Amino acid sequence: MLESVTTTALTSALTGLSQRQRAIADNIANVNTSGYRAQVVSFEAELARSVERGDGAVSPTVRASTAPTRLNGNNVNLDTETLANIETVLRYQFAAQAVGGTFSSLQTAMRTS
Image 1 (cartoon, rainbow, N blue to C red):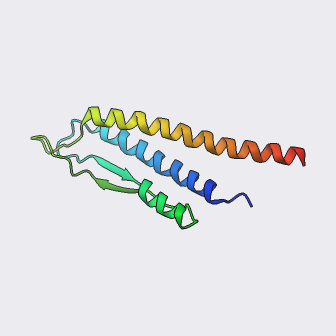
Image 2: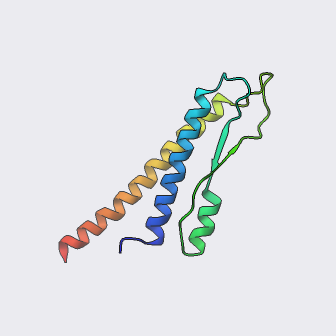
C-alpha cells in the first residue's frame, strides 16, 4: 500500500548512501595500511535506469578503486574521502527528509479523511 516508485527509489538511495558512508569510513581508517585499496560504492546510474523502468529498487555495488597507489600499495586519498563524505552526508540528509516528507504528507492525509 505504501510502496511507490518514489518511496522505493528513496529507500534504495538511502541504502546506497549508507553503504558509501561505511566504505568511506573504512577507507579513512585504512589510510596508512599498506596494500589497502580504497572501496568505491556506486548505485546512482542503476537507480536512474530503475526509476525509468518504473521500479526504483537497486542494490549498491562495491568495487576496489583503480586510483594510482602510493609506494606502499595504498590508494586512499584523504582529501578525496573527506569531500566524498561531506557530499554523501548531505545527500543522505536530503533523501531522509524526502522520505520523512512523504510519510508526513500521508499522515496528514489520513488525519483529514
